[in-house]
Amino acid sequence: MDRRYRFNQLLDFYGALLTDHAREFMRLRLEEDMSLQEIAESFGISRQAVHDSVSRSEKQLEEFEEKLSLVKRFDEMRQSLLSCEEELKTARQALDRAEELFDKIRQM
Image 1 (cartoon, rainbow, N blue to C red):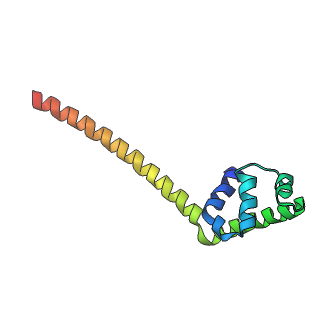
Image 2: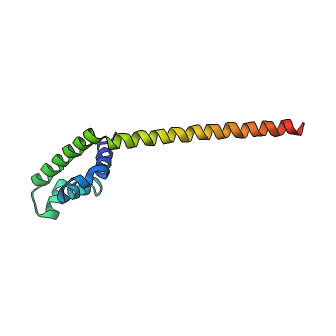
Image 3: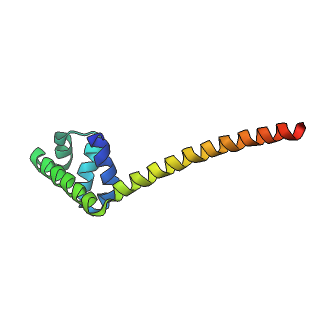
């Protein structure tokens, strides 16, 4: 899985558990694709401070997922729903075919 996508997902699920600044730094980095230097200049802090915050936040988000597994469960449910959708599509096609055969038999 793409690293950026993974952290976007983690941020969606667990972002509220981060501090306001940490969440905003992550959002700017991931969603706005801002560099660490750009974020630092926006907040009037050092690039290193932003880097440390982003690194800490990434670690925290991974720890939240390790303990709570919300993203994993969400992905599993989504995959199950997609499988169910495919099964329903196959069942509908079979039902349509059965109805066509029944209509042919009835017309005999």
